[in-house]
Length: 133
Image (cartoon, rainbow, N blue to C red):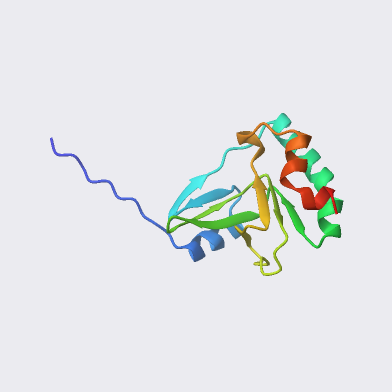
């Protein structure tokens, strides 16, 4: 018996962004491949909400933008392009203002609460400009 070839279709970034506008579920973009995202549990959402509340006023006071859950992060890694939905994302770069996603930059952070064990001391250490200035 002969194995049947498998084909993987890649889609463009433009088609991905267009599809995300109308999709009822979120997808990550992994260099041309689309992957549906799973939902979050209660603890995960509570952690994200708490961190967002903690950082919101301080980030705005410094001209930064804080996004929770629904804003995409676009970034390139080793020549491949990725888009994901971090639980929390902070950008302070004046040129990071695309209407559909944020760009990965040295002046921003992103956090996926499901993949980390984080404490308030970790946040203070990572974001000294928001808590000491």
